[in-house]
Amino acid sequence: MQRSLLLPHIPTLPSDSGVALFRKGFRPFFLLAALHALAFVPLWLAVLHGSFAPHPYWTPAVWHAHEMLSGFATAVIAGFLLTAVGNWTQRETATGGALMALVVLWLAGRAAIFFADSLPRATPALVDLAFLPALMVTLARPLLASQNKRNFVMLAVLGALFATNLVTHLEALAVLGGGVGRRGNLVAVDIIVLLISIIAGRVLPLFTRNATHVETIRSIAWLDRASIAALLVTCLHDALRGPDTRLAGLLAGAAGLLTGARALHWGARHTRRDPLLWILHVGYGWLVLGLLLRGASLLLGPPLASMATHALTVGAIGTLTLGMMARVALGHTGHMLAAPAPMTAAFVAITLAALIRTGAPLFPAHYLTALVAAGVFWTLAFLIFLLTYSPLLLRPRIDGRPG
Image (tube, rainbow, N blue to C red; front, side, top):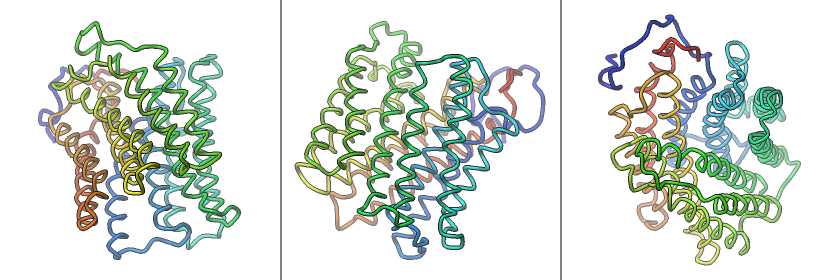
């Protein structure tokens, strides 16, 4: 493959040869996330069309949500945090054999869920639940050793995601009932949205100001704190009382207003010529819209509830993870922060997938057609990422530095 078709030309320094897959956490986990996104959504469409029947460990809807959250989203989070914590602490997280072990645990969880009907009853839960504690221990060591207290919150987020996964498995094992599997998945969405909001507040104004040199781009500290607090209260309410109450809607709506207000000075309007920037602002916009739709859904009915969920998942989580993977992989392989030409098409595709999937409930006569169209655009976006970025993720850094 000719790099000139995919990446800006950059003079390279001498570097060692060979496969670099296990030299930094983002490398294997971004590849796995893209592969999972590429394979699982078409599989879900096959379920909807009756050509594939998933195992009865969960209902099909719970299975779909679980694998998009505990499979796809968790892989992206793992790749990001394994890389970021190393930067924040100046201490390595996991490389080589330790990183390979984490990858094996994640893969084992996916296999255990897929083949759940062929395994002893509790085995899928035990295997799938092993990954997040292992990741937490891996990240806790450098964070504690460096006393990087600001980022202890990342361990709390991972612990909360583990708790939602545990609850979902306990329903499958008939230890808990009452639809707690669905609640566990919805609270997991809340937690990932909270994590995204924390990270976005740190990086979006910084990235945008550095790239555009617009000095008025800034964060407002009290709005940042209020937005995060509102999202945290929403998470706690949904976990303890459920996401279907009128109060849940009011909390989500308030969080949406605050989350949107904090971004008014982040300079989104200055990013239209930089795909690596505008895709992140678009993803953040989906987060705001999803929260506002959740608020409206408790007043206006079920169609908006589905729209809210998919604005937050396909829209915010899907768009922001694709955008961050594209940016992080460039920076940490020594390349310029300029989007490879095919990735603009990928960003457009993921945006179309979010628009179609979120709007599908408004057109009940064409609902399945809309789902197929959204799935095609989603799959196309991650296929482009995989084809474009696999060489970068597999090869050593072009500047000869470790990582």
